[in-house]
Length: 320
Image 1 (cartoon, one colour):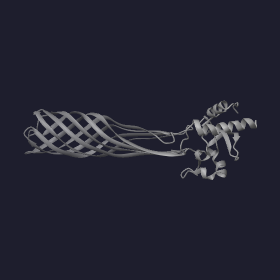
Image 2: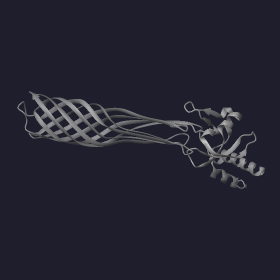
Image 3: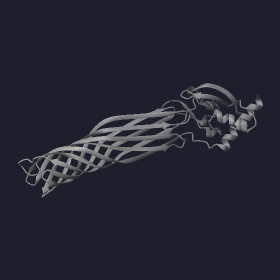
Image 4: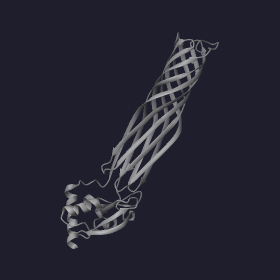
């Protein structure tokens, strides 16, 4: 039995040193991106005209699919995905403009509102994972301008720009040595072309009166950022079904176990034991008080039970 243990330990060390690259004990990463999308919707409004000057109120509601989506791989091999989506927005605005012949040049600003979804997930080894989500309707502001062209007294062509700010939403999560945070900035630009039906103009001028129509175009923005950290845990308090399978020359035990959140069987060390024999290889989490082992300082590597058994076979001994 001692011969088998020695062969298994030798295989464990040889496998660690040659065939398998050692993952860093901890790692962090950040990422960000923006998106672009189509836009389509409708609008209604009313104008008052005073000589060449025009003032009015306009409201619009549009659908879109402004989705920012990016993946991130941490130095430890952990994988993160973050995405945020603005699927609709609306505005209620004042307009102030100047008319010349069939043209209207105007500026606009007011209230905006819309829905923002934000999702972030982070997966590490040993079945560890985090998911953080938020979905909300936000209010903000909008500003822009445009040009209208009165093609006929009852038909107006529109070209418009809007900058919409719905504010920011954030999510965060931590646990099992993983932590993540993400923020979606619901700010985007919209350019549209539209067509309005101009109902019977009022007595103050040809642009006055009620109008309604539709618009289509494109949008870009919705910048989203993600920050991720992975510090794998080796604390015995987070393990179950612990069985000693070998012991190194310095007395450090090699154990077979499962994490509390996973059914996968691993072979590795216990942080509490490492802290007694090799304290320089152990760090304690600042937030959760659990111990982490830097396997590189020990010349070892965390592996699955299947990898351990395969290493025994390659070195001529039967699995323990």
